Amino acid sequence: MKSETRTYCLNILSPLHIGCGQVYEPTSFVIREAEKILVGFEPWHFLMSLSSDKRQEYSAICRKGTVESLLEIYKFINHEAGNMDGVEVALSSGFIAHHKSVLALPFNRFIRELNSFSIQRTAFTPLDMAPYIPGSAIKGALRTAVLNSRFIRSGSSLPVGKKPREENRSLQEKLLGGSFENDPFSRLKISDFYPVGPVKRRIVYGVNKKKKQRPDGKEASGVYQIFEIIEPGAVFAGTVTAVDSGAIQEPVTFQEVEAALPTFFGGEYLRELREMEAIDVTGTFSFPENTMPLRLGRHSGAESVTSVGDKRKIKIRTGRQSSKTLNHATTIWFASPDKKPKNNICLQPFGWAAFSRASTEDIAAGEAFRRREKERQDLLWQQRCQRQQEERQRRRAAVEARLQAEKEQQRLADDLAREPWRPWVKEVSTVSDWGGLQEKVTRFPQSVGLGRHPDADSLVQSPEKEEWRRRREVAEAIAAAARKVHMAYPKNWDDKRDSQVSEWLAETDIVWEPLAARQQAEQVVESEVVAAIRGFADFEAYQQNPPRIAELDLDAARLLRQRLKEWGCDQRKAKKNKQKIWKEINTAIRKLREKG
Image (cartoon, rainbow, N blue to C red):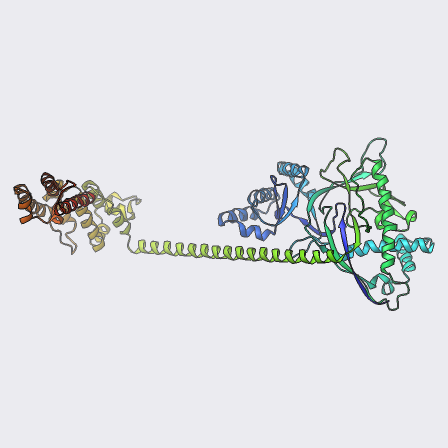
């Protein structure tokens, strides 16, 4: 037999869960109630999305390391991860209500409930998190169907006097014509099946129902389970290759497989359909034309994963330590939107699919979809890398800013230790009146850090005060503050204040120029200017000997503006030279007012 490869499609008809050993941990998903979706994400992506403050808050909760802190962690993630990107899985209203009730539980009950709140993920590819069907799952279903077909065709009987595992191995070797190295299925290579279009996922509960209602109305035992399932309507495609059989006596052919599937799984579907009708489960479906029934995945039923018809040996537990063997299962697992469904109408069986040869159009559609998905995933990856790069830059900048701030703080501390009078110099620059200046200067030690000293009052005349006052920077600050007070209140300045400032600066190299005498001299000069302004007979006389407007004080400037107004310089029809002078005097008055 020569090697041959065929492409097949798998059309999902009922909820399908292919176990992969992974779950949605409470720290790796968030529930968006309004959208009714679960968003699964990588925990380190969540950490990268947090601000520095939130990251510290989360770290503080994690460092507690107590069982009680688990609830805090869970609630923190549920509150902060609302905008996370990731795998989106649809939710039922029942699941959302269940999730909210778990968060509201007291701590001891929360921990017990959390242990059963494990959401088992269906198989997915690690790069793009997309669901897929492992080739091994399909191969197991095909093997079961072929074994059943060969058992019926051969008229064989089950081995006797052996343990169940030995019976199973002996029967398979007999039907397939040899042990592992001669097993014909070793020559059947089945690829993983990947989506050919969009795939919807949903979180459901796995609930167990008895096939026959007990007289007492008691349901099947067992705790509910939570699964991520592939919803009906998804289509996957892959290849099946029959390799050169070599020395295999009875190789598995495509014809044998395609004949075995309808015989075995078609019969199992009809059997289960009757059992579901007996307990009022209406979640049925039909197989499309030119397709073969197939069942795979978790909770696909004991009968669908065992062959040899009514000669099956299925172990049924009757208690914790007791069991019995029957040729059929006594319960059926269903997918349910609620952990305790009120009726059976909403229930659906697990794992049914339609297996068919792929057409040229199917293959082209699958390739186009995977190409688009790759482009989309590449874009998402680039965006994620960009966000990570930006986050690293942000964190690096934050660290550098913190180090710079610490460095600046240390520099200020060193400057203060070396020059403790600097804060006082800064404070005295804000003084605007004579009383404030006197207070700052006479109580100089308190202002430079001695105010908290228990003997601060006795230090007013201390050697430290006299030494600091001789500092040029301190002396310049005193002189500058005195000039500022004089400018603010020139009429209040007198010889006594000049003498006080001179006394403060006596032991420095700064010579204080008395401001009172200069003020008197300026007043004389200003009186002459004022007299000249008053003496102008008209605008022509003013133009012959005008005063310098920039050198006038506020009183003289106001007087000149009054005279210019008398001469009509403020009129709109005034000549340009009059308008120019009027504008200049108003500008000068505004600047003098701003100076105070």
